[in-house]
Length: 168
Image (tube, rainbow, N blue to C red; front, side, top):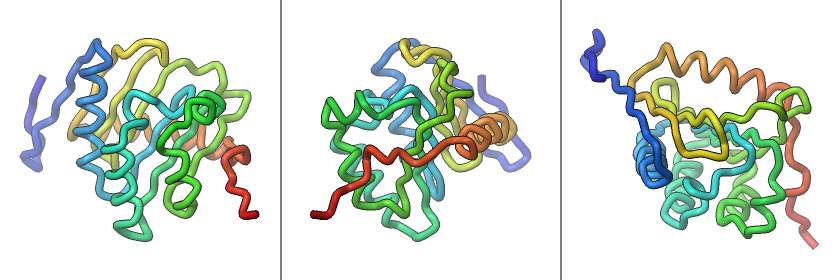
C-alpha cells in the first residue's frame, strides 16, 4: 500500500514473513536514521543487530553527533552476553549514545518487538519468536503510537548493570 502525503513522501506499509525479509527491511530502516533508533524486545535481536556491518553503521551513527541516540529496552541481555553479541562492546564503549535498559516486571509479559527510526519509520513483530510483521515508512502517526509505548516502557526501565565495563 503506497499513498502520498502532503509532503510528497510516499507512505508505505510492508508486510514480511521471513527472517531474511525482516533483516533487509531493518537494515534499510536503520540506514534512514538521522537522530534516534529505539528497539524494544525480549533481547537485542541477533538477526538484525549481531552483524558486523550493522554494528559498524551503528558505531558511525552514534558518533555522528552528540544528539544521536540508540536505545534498547529489553527483557534480558543474558542471551546476548552468552552468545558474545557484537553490539555489546560498542555499547560499553559509547555509553552516552547507546543505552541498554531492562524493562520493568510490568512489561515483561509483552511478547512483541519493534524498532522505531526517528519519527517516521518502524518495524514490528507481534511475537519475538517469529519474524512476521510489518514495517512502516513515512508514517508519523503510527510511529507516534509506537514511540508513546516505547517511552512508557523506557521510563519504567532501568539500566542493565550486567553490561557495565569493569575498568581494572
